[in-house]
Length: 162
Image 1: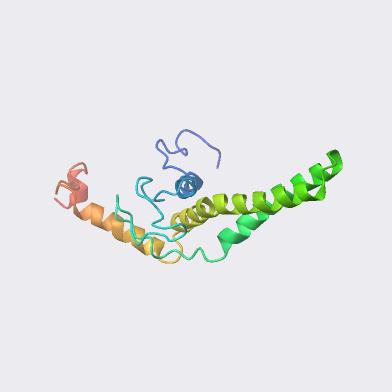
Image 2 (image 1 turned 90 degrees about the vertical axis):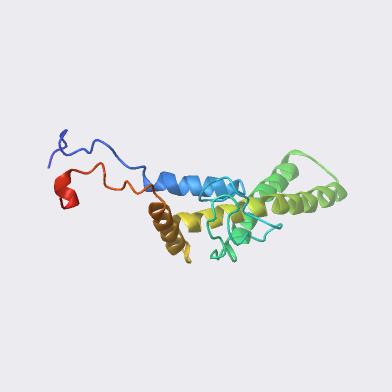
């Protein structure tokens, strides 16, 4: 079927990957993946039970081992490239290498761990994994029941059963 003006919808919903990227970006910023307002962590790596701003439940997350693996992958590549570059371009004494590279590795790991864990929690939220899907469904039904009672007023009378 060829694309014509009748086959292309006039209003398109936001694409799912954009929603996923938004949730990941919010998690990367250590904010609630649902609203982007509330804090995601109450400690260094301890995720809050629910968002203080929107009430989204966060206790479902199962980030487990993925954040450390991603951090090790990133830091290993950065430090490995740095060591290779330093060894081929400079003639530093061994004590300089022993002072720089372990310290840089530790600092990078500590700086990246929380944002990477937040991004993983945001990805789990966007994909509806580990109970996040049910929690999002409960939030949307709660929002629908708190409307002003004018639901369906925009619909034609033939659809309302009148």
